[in-house]
Image (tube, helix red, strand yellow):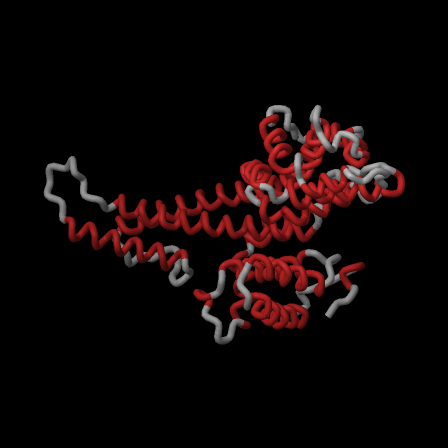
Length: 371
C-alpha cells in the first residue's frame, strides 16, 4: 500500500521543504553580506558608516539579481569589495542549498518508510490492547490471529518497532476508550460471535479509537510528522491485513517488498530530478501562464506542475493521464480550491507542447490511455 501516490506526496512535501530551506539560506547569505560591511568596532580609524551601508545595500542588490537570474554572475564594473562579498555569499548559498538538497532527498525516503513503521505500531497496539489481563478483547479471534503472526514479530524487530516501554499508552487508551465503550459492549453481548463480528469490532477500534482518540493521536503525532495526512492510508493498510480473516482466519502482514523498492526508486528519481532541473522545468511552464503572475502562484501548485513535467518526461512506463490525474488529486488535498482547475489547464497546454516537441516518449503500459 506504500504506492506511487504516497511517493508523489512525499516528493511534493520534500520539495516544498527544500524551497523553504532555500528561502532561509538566501536570507542568511544576505546577512553574510551585511556583516561583511559592518563597521569595525576595534578599528582606530573613523568608520564611514554611510558608505559601508551603501556598499552593503549594493552588494545585496547584486546578489539578489544573480539569484533571480536578472544579471550575470560576474560584473566587472562593481568595486572589488562588492565582488568579494557577493562571491562569498554565492558560495555560502550554494553549499547550504546542496547540503539541504542531500538532506531532503534522504528524508523523503525516510518519511515514506515511516508510514510503514506506523502501520506496524498500530498492529502491535491492537495486540497489546487484546492481551491485557482484564481485556474485553482477550478472546477476539482476529486479534489472536494477529498476535500469532510471525511476520508481525519479524518485521517489527527488523524495523525496531516496539511498544515495550509504552505500557502507559496502552493502559490509558484501553481504560479511556475501549473498556466501557458502547460498541465494544454490544460486541460482547453477542452470544455466538461470527468471524465477521470479530473483524467488525477490530475495524471499529482501528478507525474510531486508534486513529482518532487523543491518547493514541498524541503518541503517533510525536512519532510521525505526517500522521494526520497518512491516517487514511494507514486505515486501508490495517484493514487490508485482515482481508482473508473472514474466510480462513489468517492475517496478511504488509511488507516492504520488491514493489516498494521500485516505488522508492521512483520517489528518489522524482525528487532529485525535479529539484535539480528546477529552472528548466519552470521554463516549460512560463509560456503557458498567460495572465497568471508567477509571484502569485501558490508554491505547492508550482511544485506540482514541475513534478508533473518531470514525471511526464522521465518515466516512459507511466501513462500521461495517470500522471496528470494523480497530480490533480494531490492538489485537491494539499492546495487551494482553485488549484485543480489551474493545474489541469496548465498541464494540458504543457503536455501538448512537450508532445509536439517529441519530449514525451511512452513505452509499454505508458502508452495506455495516452493523449
